[in-house]
Structure formats: structure tokens, C-alpha cells
Amino acid sequence: MNQPILFDVYPDLSGKIPFIGPLARKTAVKKLQKMESYLGIDELWVKCDNDTNDFYGSNKPRKLEFLLADVLASGKSTIVTIGGIGSNHHLSLAIFCQEKCNGVQDFTPVFLTFNQPVTESVRKKLLIFYNCGVKHLGGDMVHAGNLIMTAGHFYGIQRLKRPSKDTYYMYAGGSDKIGSLGYVCAALELKQQVDAGEMPEPDFIFVTVGSAGTMAGLELGCKLAGLKTEVVGVRVTPSYSFLGGFFSAARAVRGLAKTTYKYLRKLSPSIPKVKFESPTTVLHEFFGKKYGLETPECRKAIDLFMENENVLLDPTYTGKTAAAMIDFINNNSVKDKCILLWNTYNSKDTSRYLDPSVKYTDLPKKYHKFFET
Ligand SMILES: Cc1ncc(COP(=O)(O)O)c(C=O)c1O
Image (cartoon, rainbow, N blue to C red):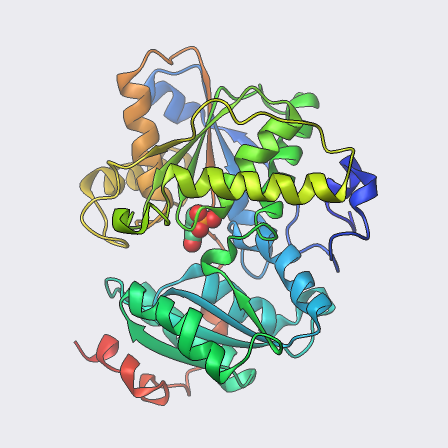
């Protein structure tokens, strides 16, 4: 497969959307028999996007295969982007730029970061951002404090320093109409798997909502594919309701799904008409106290999936989504339904991107406190 499934289904899109080669492979769907017995449900499945790529799995390769092609097509080489100090988006960008995947040469990432609870995993990621992004690729990392201040850097300070005519500004989580195409493709891939009899058509998909691109792409992709599936999002980042629900709210998902749809329709008359009638469902009550902070239900879900199915979930994203799904199964009449958990958590070991000679004191000073307290 050298071209995305989007171009197989809608051949006239080929050449109209930049694409330089696949980063994400087709992922398996697996029946979770032990969890089915545990929860008393007929059909429980997982989509293994943990395994999208050998360097780094998760939802990121699907987005980045379009985004990095877009960067290349723009003729720019510096990429400024925004995420938490433990951002998986930053991590994947650092890794794919370092690996020079897809024939991409010499991209220079600049990571803007905001606070989140510090864990060993966060520290490891910071060291990798530095090692791959700064030491090897000559990029930078800038810690601004909270999300609002970091957004100020993204939309203000950085643009004064690095004008957007030379610099590619990539949205948090790669969630714009280009990044979301990766999950339109993912839904088309699922439809092929259903048609091939690899799994029944799901009644519900449970997916994590952070910056919204994954769910937006899935929601649109399911409609385009003609799947009857309802996509249920689980919010794991703050909602910032005073910003009009910009992050993770159903509005953000729906807005991005529509923007992506309009973009595709403009490019290709073969994109079918779809309706956005039923409301987008995003569940909020599994977020807990903070972004990145585990909840007891999330820990229980992580342990259950590991013990029963050897499926690795994480405390920031997919564990909370699995907790929401378990609660949904326990409290609704859905025992005869088919439910699919979309596992977006990377399962590849990233330790090889650490360099023992890199110490936290090599990082810009503002990051030292995350290692000292
Ligand atoms: C493991 C994982 N799952 C899900 C998400 C959420 O995806 P999105 O930001 O597209 O909503 C993220 C976002 O960073 C993530 O890292």
C-alpha cells in the first residue's frame, strides 16, 4: 500500500492532497473474549492502533503521514507545535523527524510545552524531545507555563520570531483538517474489515478525545463509509468552557469533522453528501481532577485489560476511555451490541531514543524543575 485508502476509495483526490508515503499500516481488529465474559457482552473488540508503526505506534502516524507531507509541500522546514510536557504528539514528531521517515529530510521541530502532572514517563519524553528534536535536529523546546500562556506563544511570540511564511505552525495534537484525514482513512479501513468479515459492524466505537482530530476524522469517516456506528468520545483534557469548549468538547469535534468534510467536498465531487444530524457524543465525567492524572476507574480498566487481554492502556488517555466504556456497558442495555474500543496508545518501546549522555541539565533551564522536585 503506497497510497492512503482515501485515494483508493476516491481516486480523484490523488494528487490534490499532499502525500509522500505511508507512516501508518493497516491495524488488526481483535475480539476480546475474556473481557466479553467479564462484562457479559456479546461482542467486544479492540482496534489495534497501538501498532500503526514500528518506530512509534498510536494515533499519531495516521495524522502525521498527511501532516508531514503538507509540511514538505509547503516548502517550509521548521515546524512549531504545541502540547503538554508529556505530549505524545511532540514525542511522535521528534521520532519521525529523527527517523527521516517518508523521505522527509531535515525538518526542525520547535516544541512549545505547557504544564501537566510530572511522572517518570513525562521526564523520559522531555529527554527524548531534547535528544531528537534539539540535539540531533537543531530545534528548540520552549516552556511557557499553562496552556493559555503557551497558546500565546503559538499565536503571538513565536510568529514574531519565526514568521509563518517560513515556518509551519502545526496545531496541538496535529488536529486540523489535514491531520484528521488520517482518521477518515482509519474509518474507511474499518469499513473494509467489516465488509471482509473480520468483525461485525460496530454499534459503538469508544475513542479518546484530546485535541479532537482523531474523533473528528472517525466521525466523518464512518459517515462517508456508510457505517451505522455511533462514535462515542471520552474527554481527557480540560474543557476550558470559557473558551467556548474549544478543547475536546463535542463542538470542537463536530466543527473539525465539518471543516474536513468541506475541504474534501471542495476537492472531489465524488465525496458523497453526508448529514450531521445526530449530536456528537462526548462523555466528560471520566476526566477526573486533572489532565494526565489517573482516576481509580481508569486504573481498574488498565489492570483489567492487561490481566485479561494483554492490552496495554495508559492512565492519561486510553485508560479513561476504557473506564467510560465499561461504565457504559454496565449501565445501559447494550449486552447484545457490538462495541469497539479504539486503542490509540503507542505500544513500541521508545527507550532507544534516549541518549545516556544527555542529562536533564542539558535541557533549557525552565525544564529542570520537572526533574528536581
Ligand atoms: C494516546 C493518545 N490517545 C488519544 C489521543 C487523543 O487524540 P486527539 O488529540 O486527536 O483527540 C491522544 C492525544 O494526544 C493520545 O496521545
